[in-house]
Length: 303
Image 1 (spheres, rainbow, N blue to C red):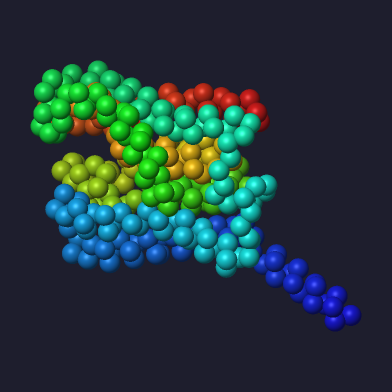
Image 2 (image 1 turned 90 degrees about the horizontal axis):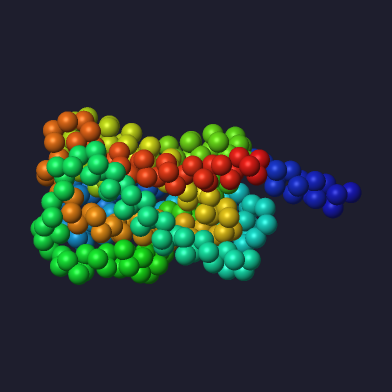
């Protein structure tokens, strides 16, 4: 009788945490620890440009917090650490069944949409074109042509840093959100949450600088929009590959800016109009939407 009662109590304890409560615990831990870290790493509120490289690297360590909170949440809620099947952590690397294709796509896709985004930006604001801007970037022309390759190589090498984010957002938050509210709403809510998590960095000018109308609130909104679109692509590649590592590689390659055209776009030449000031952002958003469309069509067909 006592054994049956103990078994019943143990079963009840495992059911104490619903997907909603687990997600709440994860987000509370991630935002609390991340925002505390960003404050402690930059207590005087220096802008990103004014920081030295060492402090920038110190602040950037906050990228590791989402995956740490993923692990911590699983420990608190007793979910375990499966590498396959339902409710797995997506930490494993899967190459069979042609899943290696998604690792290759993770390297190439950011180059495609970055290059396309820059082309669209020049179409919106042709005055941005500066045939010798790469010299101001202190880059030789032949090295500029190798930018995509170096970004891909660096992306693979430093993907462990981007794994800090993707292991949390794509490895834990998105699967929980999709179970709770369905894919469509989850992709929007997840992107907004991810964008708001960047708010302390956006407020010090990491993403868009500090010299723009509506700073920093407009920057936070822009970051949320970009994270929704990026999140759709990263969630798709995680789901199809069964691993967060392709998303981590794509995230890292994206952060390295794999674009040749970027060496010919001088932001100082932007016309003082809404479209001129935001040409780069608008171009990237349009390019991301173009990449996103076939993904959404595939998901809808599957549904």
